Image 1: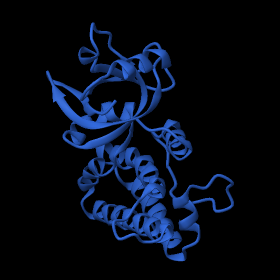
Image 2: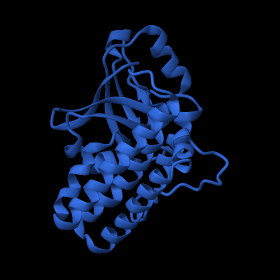
Image 3: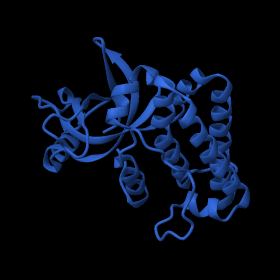
Image 4: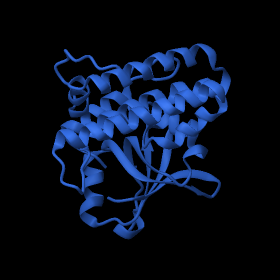
Length: 231
């Protein structure tokens, strides 16, 4: 699960509706709440150029792709942007300065996205493979594209309801509900690696805590679940 101001910015981005709309990658450099990745992008003419190229090619493909290919394009626009902004949390084993690490992370993602968009221009079906390139997902899009995410590490935004049980060890199952909570909202089964009395008590006291839940997409009894979650 994720907490903190930087993560909150990512969570807010995921909450906005993504279906049927263009999610622009360009950064409003005059904004008051820029992430570290956005600040580094604004400071670099090269990154700004790459960002513009991504937006222009995305707009072109939205006008030309159809069916499932267009849906894959649109549904990966926000996960791509969130992944880009999450570069503010990037680290390096080479002990480079923070700005260099963030810059390299943003550039890598922009170039990879641009390559994928160019490939989709000549082979439209290739854009579906972009689904597996990003880790931050909303529940509706996880439910929609789950088979494409099978076996991958993802971070699912939602509110966790822990199943009851007689012992902490038995309380490793739960359900991640879409946020904001709705009577008929979508949900995803969740399985923790372990559970302690302290953590179980916290879950019940917090009353369906919301955040990003990191795990691996697995198939259990013909259903897709988010498993291997650390409490």
